[in-house]
Every structure is written in C-alpha cells, then in structure tokens.
Amino acid sequence: MAALESRIAYQEHWLDTLDQAVAAQEARLTQLERINVLMQRKIREKQQALQEGDAAAPSAEDELPPHY
Image 1 (cartoon, rainbow, N blue to C red):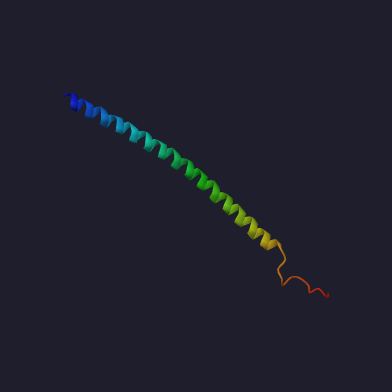
Image 2 (tube, rainbow, N blue to C red):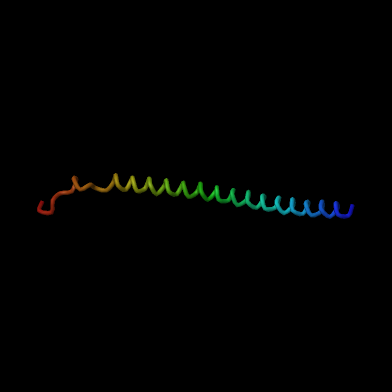
C-alpha cells in the first residue's frame, strides 16, 4: 500500500511539473506571437515608406543630362 501511495505522489509531482512547463510554454508562445505581429507591422511600414520614397524620388529618365 505504501508503494502505491508513493507512486501516486510521484506521478502527481510529475503532472504538476508538466503542467507548469506547459503553462510557461503557452505564456512564451503568446509573447512570441505578439512580437511577431509587431515585427510584421514594422516591416509593412518600412516597405510602404520605401515604396513611397521610390515614388517620390525622381527616376533616371526624369533627370536632365548634366550638360543642360
């Protein structure tokens, strides 16, 4: 009987340990997902700024040759 009680206590300990590990991983995953969303937003903003900068900058065809 004591051996069974010991096994049950041991299993409960490991279940608690696994539960804590899963909770920590879930919190980390949530944090990484938030970081991912922010990074994607920043990349989109940078791409937009580059595209707007390219549209505003004169192209080689629009520039006059140096002798004019």
